[in-house]
Amino acid sequence: MRSGQSGRHGKDPFACEFERVKRTVKAGRLEEAFQLLQEMEQKSLFPMDRRCELYELMGQLLYWLADLREALPYLRKAWEYPRADHSARLAALSNYLMYLHYVEGVTAEEMRAVHAAYADVLGALPQFSHRKRKREKLRIGYLSPNLTDHIVLNFAIQLFSAYDRTRFEVCLYDVGGQHSEVTDWVAGMADRYADLSKYTPQKAAERIYADAADILFDLAGHSAGGKTLPIAAYKPAPVQISGIGYFDTTGLPAMDYVLGDPFVDPPEMDRLFVERILRLPQTHLCFTPSERFQPYENLKRTPHDPIVFGSFNNFAKITDEMLVLWGEILRAVPAARLLLKNVHPRKDALERMRQRAKRAGIDFARLELRPGSKDYLPDYLDVDIILDTFPYQGGGTTCEALFMGLPVVTLAGRRHGARFGVSLLCNVGLGELVAESTEAYVERAVGLASDPELLAALHAAIPRMMRASPLMDGQGYVRAMEAAYEMIWERYLNEEA
Image 1 (cartoon, rainbow, N blue to C red):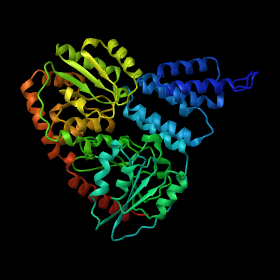
Image 2 (image 1 turned 120 degrees about the horizontal axis):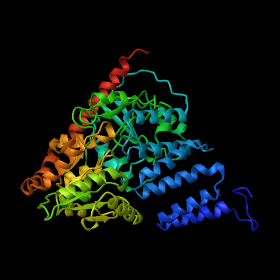
Image 3 (image 1 turned 90 degrees about the horizontal axis):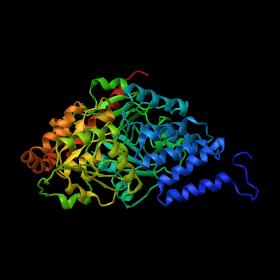
Image 4 (image 1 turned 90 degrees about the vertical axis):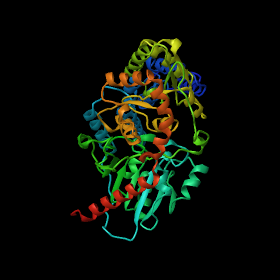
């Protein structure tokens, strides 16, 4: 009997086994679900036209288990394998591009080439033609799947609330389909809000074009399955920007600019983007803490004895190479401990991380693993020094740590997504915590742990430095963005047809 056909009792073996897998995933038994999928693959139970689903789920499970190196081959097959649903293939490719940033060994040039493949898979789409015009106010559209309680909102909210209404009109285009009280609150800030979550990409693009947006800012890129990019590919606005929610080229010829700054995007970065880099003078990110940070406004803390290093990043960002470095740091500071807090609540990921840490030479007795939780800010009080991940660095987690008074040691990479920490620390005035090599990374961390007086002084000073920095100067950030909008709009008007 061919796979996918019904058995003698009329039950499809594939459907039965796949439902069993789904129930196992829902119950939180991810390792078991992955093993069931492996058995299905070995028995050829997956019909050929659904193999892509097999690989996608296997890759997703390994991602949830924080084993990206094992996940990537499956995630690549998920978009390379033929499938009838073109939009699902595009989403699988966007997810693959996101996950590609988690692992070491991918060169910047290779990254650009795989992003360019997205445009090839998407194919040529008809683009809107635009008549150049001047008007009293520039119309800025923000396209996002995250206009709800999401970390991207912490970095975008000032753009919606603090813009100059005498010079700009703002419309929010929501493709997330996750309407909440936060969405209503954000929608009330702008001139207009449109829920496009039920629209096809073409219909969504037609709506944005009909609104006559001058500049469209895509806040998501390939995150969230790349929902925004098939819309932007139609070129519904004459000038289009990507940034904040994604940290690389989109690969789309229809995208004109990517948002950056001098720290995250030194001149050699230009060749890695299809887009032109629009560098703001200081920071391309502005952090606005949510209300849950209020109890920690006047935090006073003293270093622990022994010192506690920590990471609050997604476990999937913690590569084997980083674990080896963290093991070196622990051996150089014999009494120190390491606390790793995941962003996901899944318990399976803790055991897999424990085994990976053991292979890296980290003593179990000095390692504490905590699952993700909704109320995680108190966990920062249990840590003295944050160790940033590499090559996919912390963005929101680094800003949270700085707000909570913790120094962050980061390793500078060679592409935008591997240099978040460089920009954040330099803008706060902590550039000395940026390491240019793995050896320097270890030295910075060990040096901080070995100087409790310096560490105590940093704990006291960093919250003030953070609040006084460009990272939390909402007005200054919005003024810089508005100057950039006017500059690129004038450039567009003055370009020859």
